[in-house]
Image (tube, rainbow, N blue to C red; front, top):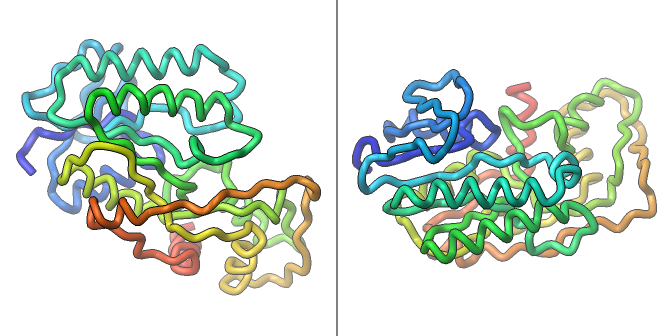
Length: 266
């Protein structure tokens, strides 16, 4: 990849930090675009994305959105409008290619995250019209992840006598962050157009995840307590065959391997 071709918004977030780390290892030059100070080299700090002046034939990786679904749903339509307007401003810069990080949640029939899903859908439409790439991420976990997720909740309680969770029966698709980053880098290199699911392709219950944790870190925990016993909270299967074929990508980390790495880093 030619130098100075890659611009990343939202580089200070969970995905962004891991992406930057990998780009540095691969010696892929990049700029971090931010509206606040960051710890990264090559940061372009600006008040408004309209002030960005990328070099010719550049690629945009757009990560700069709030992924805390509970917070997003409280913001309502303003959140959607802000994201749409930001994306439109960025796309006026005439990029060689644009990669938008979306979520597999847009196709999941869940009774939550409605504003979050509407925002992602609205931005996806803009990206498709632009001829860009949409990477729909599943539930990611790994270094720099938020404290507000199931893996963090479990880790915090591993030294307790029991583990209390909202719904241990919830079924999800989980992917180790390094696999997600490799998919982004593949999309940068191949610049395909369209929608791609970035997921493990395997469903697992939260209770099963807890059991994997306990096989590695056993502290005499005898039971898992649910605070929402009657809630049905299931993901449908996620098809990643198109992603494997077009991006020459596949997940390399099992849930067991990911948990071992997570505990090692904790």
